[in-house]
Image (cartoon, rainbow, N blue to C red; front, side, top):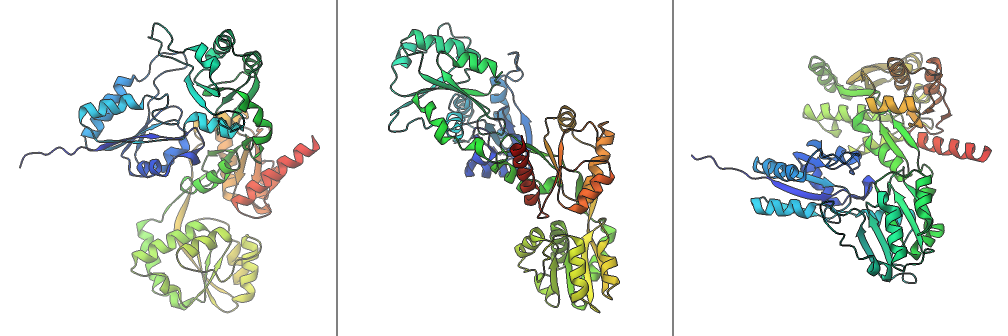
Length: 516
């Protein structure tokens, strides 16, 4: 039988201006299906966590202008990978066609007979305007908006821009990629007849925690931008809409705007916390201290044997989200489901664990007011005297429960369903940020994570005394573990969850701002 080639497909997708929440649902679906993601330098790396495919950066230029990957190479790669049967996502910052070269890639794919789909994205101008507080087409200000390139094809002999027409344009002008030509653009507009008092602004890193906005007029904005040492990516906005910023700026008012926070949870559990930080205006820095993995195969028979005796336990105790997930994975592998738990009451250490149980159709019978092992153990010691209790747990952790329960006459059995392992090192980026002080906060969510953070600081040759990164602890127990390691804890969560950590950081910043 002759070999039949199977052609894949290419998706030319817009990633939005920066905030990972601004990607479209369709683009997110395609990332989930991708075998390969070729992304450009303006794509937020957090979006790459949406795919299991191989991810490769395809920057076309260095800062000095020298070429890394030519457009022709990118076109050829898209065609070759699709011909190999792969689903390829070409992920581009903003929108793939608005001052991007997505249409060139589409033409190359069309000529090669490769199936493709274009997925529009939130273009940078829209993101920059609305996150900075500008309405480009407010009906009392402007009836039109023009998107203009500030960086034309360098091989072109003459500019295609008609500055006299732009100076007469009855609306808002938005220049893409024009920061390095800001003085020249303003000079051309003034020379063409636009009043030098026309409001203007530069927006850099739009919709990110590093967003900067500088306001002025055509006459003053070049000096103002230079004084702030702004860096691309950026957009230049010219028009009366700039005056709206005083009333409509909202993004920079978010409680964690501009704040970078290290998320020390296991990598696979970092996304929900990262999303919370982004929604509060901050920058999540994923830096797992521990890894979560399955137990060794040799331990599985013991788990299955315990499942044979579930009817013997009056209480099942879950002290982590991971414990819930792995317990039910093993339960389902044994051919059982939630009905096997009918004889037992269920205790959960906190709301996150209780919510995870609920996702499996189990309502926790007891959640202590304080999300700590001491509170859980004390309450169970009263409720479960003389009864059989099964504690579902990790391979290691705090052993508070055994002492509290056994001293009260509770018959406790422990079931290890997953392993906690220390990570070997910080990433080079995290080390650099800790040393430079550009990572402002780190959240520590357990005593073991606190100890591992201290250990990794030692390995990175960063002493606690020189560490400028502030530390937030999830509980007083975790704070004591950090203190034992020589670390200074700035604040402690009132509610022992990651949301509690973020709330504590917000409160600490407000208190510091008030005192200053």
